[in-house]
Image (cartoon, rainbow, N blue to C red; front, side):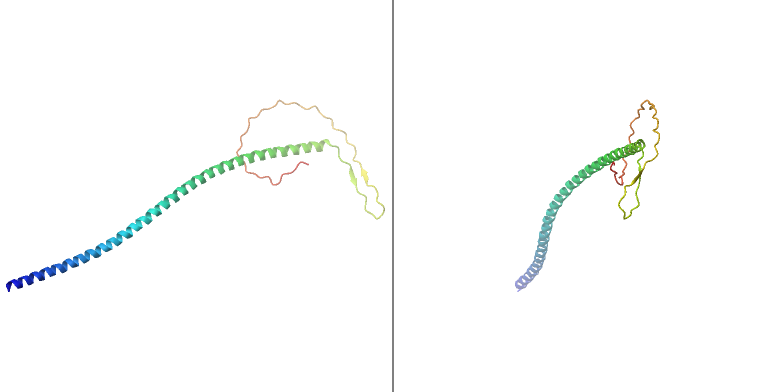
Length: 175
């Protein structure tokens, strides 16, 4: 009977070891399943992020190209604005010069013309219309013209002016 008890003890030992081994295998299986699920999630996340990175790179390249185009356009418009400001300054200078010349010639014309006769209108009555009486201004002596004094031409160095931003209120047409 000693052999049966010894065999019974061995069976019990092996059963205990098998139970503990089964528990270890079950724990390892659960760990493996959890790790496999985590690996699948990580792989899916990696794939998603890789695609997002690719899209972000494309977007970044597109935005960089747009930024270059915008910078180029900004330089061109700044140059155009500077050119327009310079042309405006030149145009205003020419306009002011022409306006001064026009005023000077109108003054000279007004001084050179004899005064116009003054017309006095007749009072309005129901009577037949009368002709307007024209009064002539007293005759003036013509001024004696002196010979013009000739001056030596003076050469001036051209003056470089900074562009001035002025806009005339309203241009007067020569009358």
